[in-house]
Image 1 (cartoon, rainbow, N blue to C red):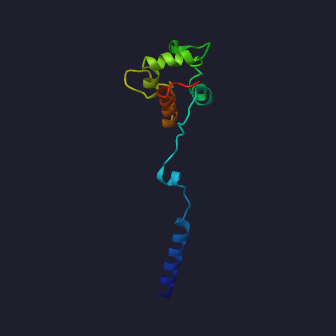
Image 2 (image 1 turned 180 degrees about the vertical axis):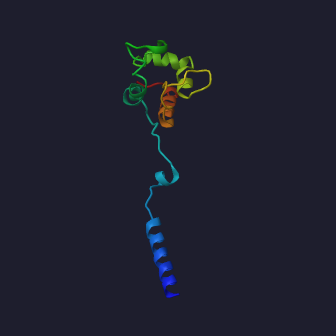
Image 3 (image 1 turned 30 degrees about the vertical axis):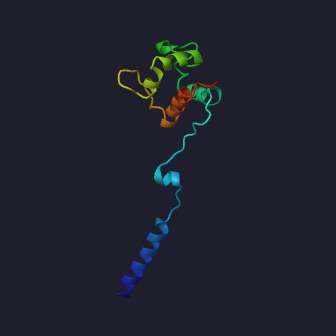
Length: 121
């Protein structure tokens, strides 16, 4: 009987010690922040296009007649409701980036907020 009690106490101790972990609020609740304050093309948006679009849509390879290195073309694609629908993967629009995972929600949100707030350079 004493052995069973000792085993139970030892097991309880190890369960207690190894089940205690530190997790930040972001890890625990899967909360991430997306800074959308004072976005500009040069400081914020251009990097999104460089990383995710330039490979296919650049000065030499303008697939879909879209050059993501040219802000004027970006504005046009937004005005025509093509760019935002493509990156949001709306049915009937090309899914961009092609053959790759959808852009992170925060990146899409940054483009949408930048657009909505006047497309600061």
